Length: 138
Ligand code: SF4
Ligand code: SF4
Image (tube, rainbow, N blue to C red; front, side, top):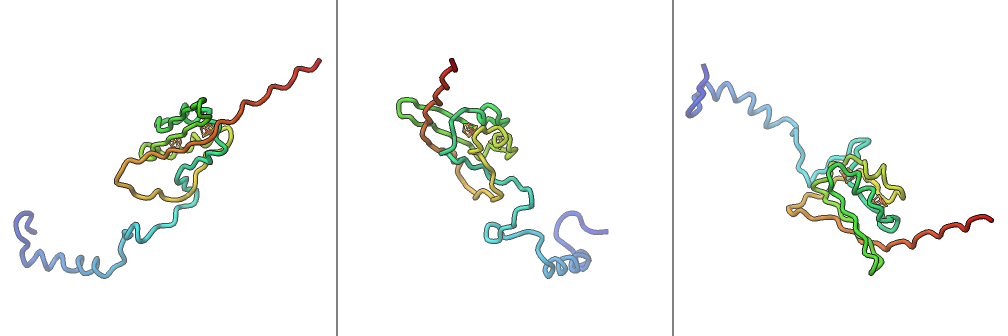
């Protein structure tokens, strides 16, 4: 019978030694991240990016995002729009990418860098002029 409490006895050491030696000389099951980075799996969605020059600040991504981590605002006075995303709340579902009418949103199979702070991704772009309506045919 092995001891459950207190210090290890001689019989316990004898019992554990083969396992300790085996673990000591076998290949590690973990990686020294971020020194050793694992290649992403095929079809890994990865990180969300916005090509802000293509964004029309329509808010579709904000409305459809299940995590409510996107905020889109327009400032008509300055002629700019702002797209903000909280990467810590994002579940990388890709719904916003599917809904974006201009395909400005896309996902890249890369790992987001670790961070100790909850930084938001904030991008500012120019508002596009409204499309001119075609003149009605007479
Ligand atoms: S990223 Fe796409 S869906 Fe979101 S506001 Fe811009 S154009 Fe609209
Ligand atoms: S990937 Fe999903 S959770 Fe992340 S911002 Fe897009 S819709 Fe929201």
